[in-house]
Amino acid sequence: MKKWYAVIGDPIKQSMSPSMHEAWFDEESIDAAYIPIHVTEDRLREAVEGLKNLGCSGFNVTVPHKSAIIPFLNQLDSSARQMNAVNTVHVLEDGTLVGSNTDGKGFVRSLEVACGEQCKDKKVLVIGAGGAARGIAFALHSAGYGPIFFTNRTLEKAVQLATELSDSAVLSVAEAELSLAEFGLIVQTTSVGMNFSQQGMPLNPENMSEGTVVADIIYNPLETAFLAEARKRGASTMNGVGMFVHQGALAFETWTEVRPETGFMIDKITTTLGG
Ligand code: ATR
Image 1 (cartoon, rainbow, N blue to C red):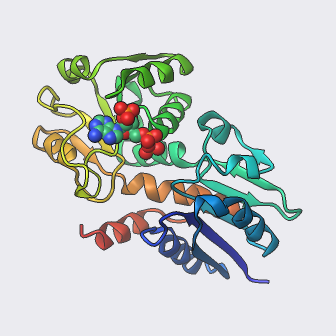
Image 2 (tube, helix red, strand yellow):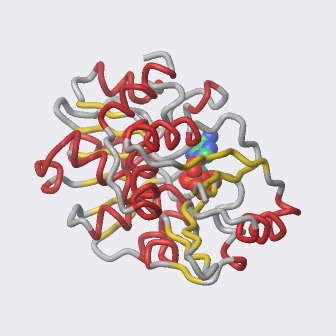
């Protein structure tokens, strides 16, 4: 039987995962399909049962179900446990549902491609303390990056995150702004700047120094106001397309044991988004 995969979320029609995975199936000559499915919160349990019973081999999970899906799965890998969130489910032959989270590792892979080994020696500032910041910080730490400093509008959330991650510390937004030049790598994980709906910047970039590597996990728009300011100050910038493609590539690998080509996919998505 032809294998099939899916992505579930609410909303779902904006998702670029179907076209990405379909293109990889074509590229790798794998006879499989990948479909978007709109699932509301109240139907999540039934949807997961349905996917399993209808022979789905694996699926991605997006907003708002990444944590809510956990009780409906049979196993979680260490990445999903650490983040308390799942973005990839592998349905094993016997129906066992295994959840993992490829977001953080996807970010680290995209950073490795853009920055090589040189980013490993840099002091890291993570802006934000939500789910994305958590995944990225844990993945950076386990890949040998750090020390990691967190800053966030709501300071208590950053403090909580730092208590869970060794070799990390917290700065208020004002402190981070003052000491910005000390950081070689800055990772913007908040939703500020997304889709032009949240205008503005998460912090004042005035003290950013030339040569800093600045990553924003947002990919729509391709360049947030924060990234544009960083670029004007001579920083090397990367947007969120790389993270998006690499998290998808890791899911694809989980399901098919094939590592898909990411370079052409990053170009393709960048073009689609108007780059
Ligand atoms: P995600 O899973 O994308 O990380 P999240 O867990 O809801 O989403 O976290 C959102 C992050 O963006 C948080 O760090 C949030 O800051 P607070 O903890 O203070 O809420 C940050 N964020 C969202 N809107 C923001 C804004 N207007 N200004 C500053 N930070 C904002």
